[in-house]
Length: 99
Length: 276
Image 1 (cartoon, rainbow over the protein chains, first blue to last red):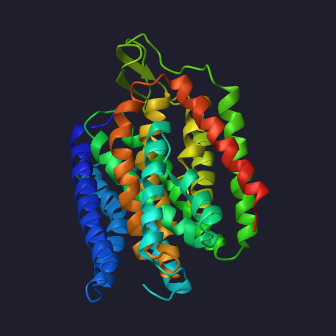
Image 2 (cartoon, each protein chain N blue to C red):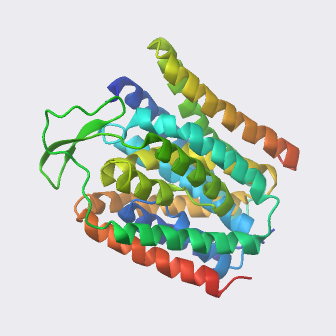
């Protein structure tokens, strides 16, 4: 059904993202609870941003892989998904206070 | 915005462990348990509860799919196709969530859970796997090794438009209610679209990262995603779901469905009895 290469690449992207965000969130949370102020907000926000960016990165590598395979139907479909994710960032900016 | 105290963080961390464990046992992200607890139990506002839950949904999707990416049980092509609908639904839901009253969201949550529970209960004994290995699976179908039958089984995808509609609704409800939406997609994919429960669950778990992201981005942009509380919940859910996957593979599918239905009915009743 699916090719193993894309699954492997996606596995690596997801694993990297979840480990990186968990480390930032864990460190940020522990530091904030023991009362260290300075780096905590940055660590926590970086953790959240990496967490939210992981699915986006997974969609981008899928597009690249489908381009390599010349599977234009799935290039189009995954590109639409990326556009929808980008639109949510635009909506966030419209509603915004933080991004 | 809630004040982040160590005890609040600890309670959310423990709630995350329980939601993560239950969720992965039942094949759903923990959101269906976490949102009612944060909202009704801890009195966090509905958008704040939903935003924390969406963060855990993304984390669950990433870690579960990373672990399963070697097993061939995720149907990648079906997942990517349905993501077009689910991400669009999520985008609209994230915008809508900023415009409607929290009490409406609570009732919608209750009604959604009740409807899903009843769907699951009416289709408890259905099996979708084709045990004959020579049958063609079509463009989107697939085959995988199933422990219950002890061999390779195949399936075909039926009623694709229905799967797309369900994914759109799931995406919409996901942003609005802070759940992954797997709780909608999995029963529809399994009951009507011919996809075996384990493939439906794995493919849904793969998709919910992308489903939850537009909503989470919008909540984060609004300042409704509290990073410290999200951190506590995300770490708890990850810890909770860590061992439960191995248990889930050994429990008969029928019992998992029954347990999920009962839990959903309880959650639905709580949301209706205690709206604020």
